[in-house]
Length: 372
Image 1 (cartoon, helix red, strand yellow):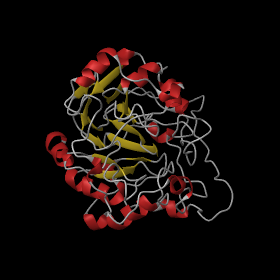
Image 2 (tube, rainbow, N blue to C red; image 1 turned 180 degrees about the horizontal axis):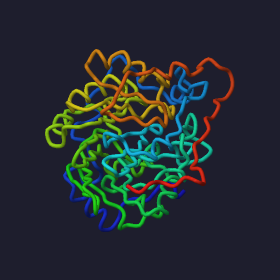
Image 3 (cartoon, one colour; image 1 turned 90 degrees about the vertical axis):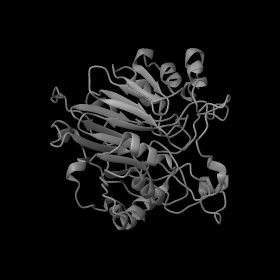
Image 4 (cartoon, one colour; image 1 turned 135 degrees about the vertical axis):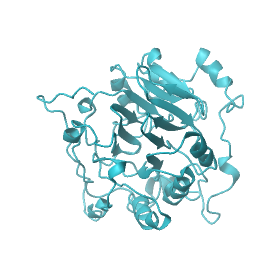
């Protein structure tokens, strides 16, 4: 199956072997995930629990969404705007440039089109309606972050990719020209040609692999995107690690912090944050407005689909976190963050029947994107 990707080889593999993170067989975390369970009283879920357990894991009604096309036609007043498109896919507009993180438009977080976690509803904007992109950032190679059909379509565009060591093998196998791929080890930076935009890969605590045999043969990273005026932190997938303090010291301060908050379990150890640990990570990072990602799109754990949002709404203000929790497709400017409206509470989780798919915004034939 082409969707499984390709393992690194040749010069790419030699570069991987030179990484301080490489053990000789695979990449490793700075702090072992298996050092202990996050909650000693929690038992590891069974396959049956994962497939059938948990209440309200999928919303029973459509999530409200916004068509951002009109807003995208105007430059953000502050110079920095973010539009959450679902899971970890965010369009960042940063000082006139457009950066897309972990783009996933496919219907499932899976190598298969007929099996695996299905997204709650389509992305609020069709991929062909997206404005011209200046950069695509991919944090690691898991299916809910690196999507085969999406990359195949993006490969036809003249857009560069920045990703973690080894992930370029997948991109190249799926049609992205090798000269448009930059792979980074932790603390390495890349300046996008002919711009003042820099991307730096930073530590995270997770794992990688699209098959059991390819586990940890590519690197996983958080990413910092910085222009002369603004800086954004994107966690990718990660557990809580003290490296967040080093990230703050070396790469901060930040205007916007995008941290994963969903698809976690108390028995999995620190390979995902969850909402409470995301708030701790936010405190370590020390600055910025907090945009939660990695929730509200796929059922990848046993918790209720809206549990991360409820925990953040309750605990965030008590811990001094400035949260932004927009609807799908709703552009927000961190500099103008306002009061949170808990839109997820309006979703009819008690309705009977299949989820109603929200309409997908497409680009009108009469509309063209302004030049920046």
